[in-house]
Length: 231
Image 1 (tube, one colour):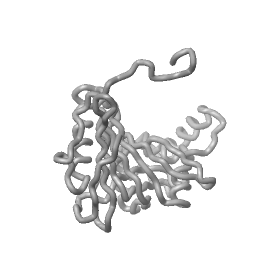
Image 2 (tube, one colour):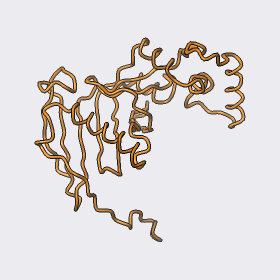
Image 3 (cartoon, one colour):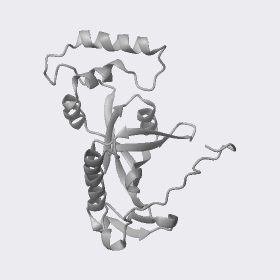
């Protein structure tokens, strides 16, 4: 940061591959999935995409103020991206009151990003239960120990609650050792728009956007109108 508080004095010219109309199908799922797969592979092979499924999720609170945080996207299919969270957390309460959200996957080292905007739908309990039982033991205990987004006096109190939960539900190696908390669930974003951003030299970036025309999944060309936005 410079003396006058300005950031970004070391400019980087984005050398991404870009995205042409020829590379963009009539429905967005195939290219979104391809980009995600490439980010996962690059993270494994080169280590410069440490959390390829990190999803920034924006919601709106009761006062109309935007709120954003990062979660891990655990599903991506023709319906849309999905993640798990505490339903009594700030985002859980906000989505219950106003079930709309925006989300973004960003891979800076690849000069790529994907944006979603649309409706929030709470995940079915069966899916929540199946996923919860697949989590490591410690993560299942943490879901009970943490009243997500609620104040806590200090780290010691949080760790003591965790130990109390360990004693209540000891690890016997069974996925059902720890019950699914009632307050734990998840949401799926059903998009009304999807945008792919690809960084280019001279800031002349590519922005291809799909806007919803009618019902249908991310794999249904009849549901979408594709266009290009200026950078």
